[in-house]
Image 1 (tube, helix red, strand yellow):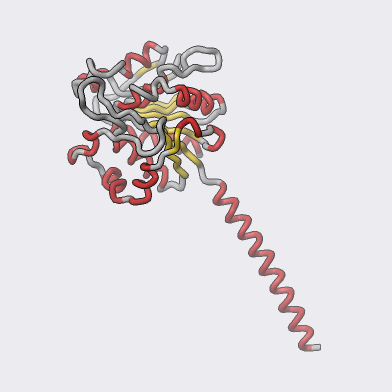
Image 2 (spheres, rainbow, N blue to C red):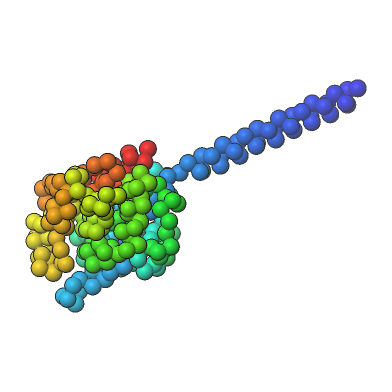
Amino acid sequence: MLNLKYLFIGVLSALMFTACGTDNSSQSKETMGSAKKVLFVLTSHDQLGNTGEKTGFWVEEFASPYYFLKDKGVEITLASPKGGQPPFDPKSDAPESQTESTKRFKADKDAVAQMASTLKLSTVNEADYDAVFYPGGHGPLWDLATDKNSIALIEAFYNAGKPVSAVCHAPAIFKDTKAQDGTPLVKGKKVTGFSDSEEDAVQLTDIVPFLVEDMLKENGGIYSKGDDWTPYAVEDGLLITGQNPASSELVAEKLLEKLN
């Protein structure tokens, strides 16, 4: 009888352990499934007009938001119009342009590998993500501003009630995006982006295909800005925009608040 008693206790304990293990497993899966997913879209354009110089995305505008969000548990996927390695602006890799986040990126083998294998934009589905973020650099002025896949993606995110964020030159993506009524997406909305005075300061006013500040105003956006080169970001509903490289993390902060 004593042996049967201990056998019964053992079986009961095993059943309880299994049940608890199942609950923990389910809870773990549920926790893993709750991570927010953000799509980063980078430029594939590397020519700075007819200057013969190279351009692309600005490294700080990628690295700063990337690590801010990643460190908070956000899952990040990278995409670009052509897929693969997107070009970075050589000036953003200069010693004077380095920040803690750019240094961290250079030393991060996993992030560097992820950057080298961005998804082709045409294969991306809005339904797979909770928000989209566009880093700047001059490159987007030439490709993402008019890229049909990018335009359709932005409109899909917005119409699905998901945040659309961009910093510095990346608000160029709103050049041809439309609201459901056919009007410019930024019409009547508070926005910011690389200012005319900042473009003049880098002596590229006559090189770029259009000025971000002027385009946003022409599209009916309620444009505002801070002092040149200082952090400044604006949120209006689902749209979050930042003025310059220094505004990158501030945009990411506002995006995370929106996601939570």
